[in-house]
Length: 463
Image (cartoon, rainbow, N blue to C red; front, side, top):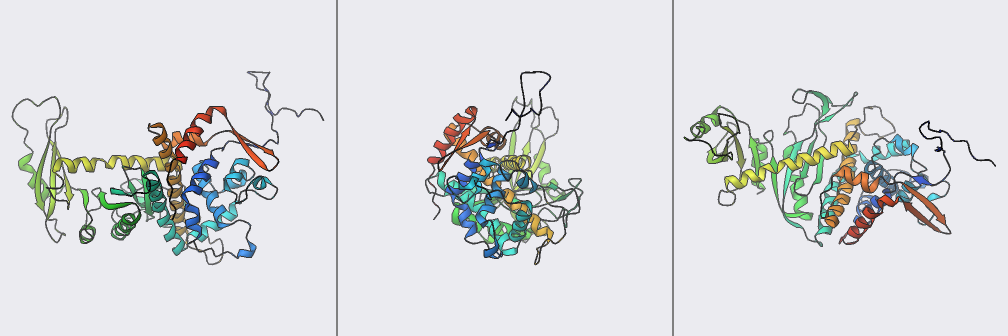
């Protein structure tokens, strides 16, 4: 047979021919690294042992573990849509990464990625209340397993839980999406918990687009604190922005003996308390802007008692008037001074950066469909919450890999850099006898050696 005709001969180089051949090539060689992390962490086994699988077991083609791996690996590799599974169903690296089969069996005829309808049915199953609750727990469980693995099985002494709203813009007729005047967009407004210091996402609850910042916060926070103090840390401290402090949440945290720090909005009463401290000191200001702290006790109109507030007064370069804001906490002054309280609160910026990475790299796209797809279907809002939680779990898998690279290289890694340098790697699968060999691009080899060395050094304990 003659040579195949090229599909393209570029005009800039007539000596370059572009052809399509039936070689086992993949642009997602790093998917096997994601599978290895999933396998070592044991999170898939943890999920499948507890999820309610309502499928007729004698009529299924894909075990639940394969379906979960498919979703998490595709999201991790940057494939956002369920339709992508159809386009990639014969990709050799993805088939090896997802299949339960070993050796070369994963590449045999009939072994391919699940189709889009199969993944849609998985989402329906996961959106059932009990399964959705388990997904919520799985995100923090994955974070806990990574932290303990990197600390030789030990929990952290203390973590700070950052509680915030996360605007997710939507396009379509998603149930409970609404126009939010603060963000000026049609959106959902989920509440999200993360840890700024470690970069982990821990949990989320989907809420209507016009939900108040603090809606549902009390149950969400107390449940999360209880779980993380069992598996992740000894003490959990809660950090919030000015939209959260309300009597119910503050009283609930205090009854639970959970320390918190929050910013509170200025009002006329607080302005009167601040007024005596807003006069600029006499004399020329120093080159470095100054900060002053003033301790006060304050009770808002709806509060049942006075609480500790700290007035923070700041000089702004080039501005005549002093700036100020208020911090609220139940931590005693002897334990945390005003200066230390401000330093703690300013760590929120890291949490916002990690949420930005979630939206940039994982880019959760929530479904616009409100039609029932199969009998006993969940509602579309529940499906979208399950979809959001799967993205958070995929973030945790990617973040775990990023932490491995940071530890072994002793340099910072963004989530995007980890994906582009380590995961999105060209590869060819070579079959010989009963063995499949994944041949990766030589440019990626140094990163893979570092990653494998770092992964081997983790002390996973899945018991």
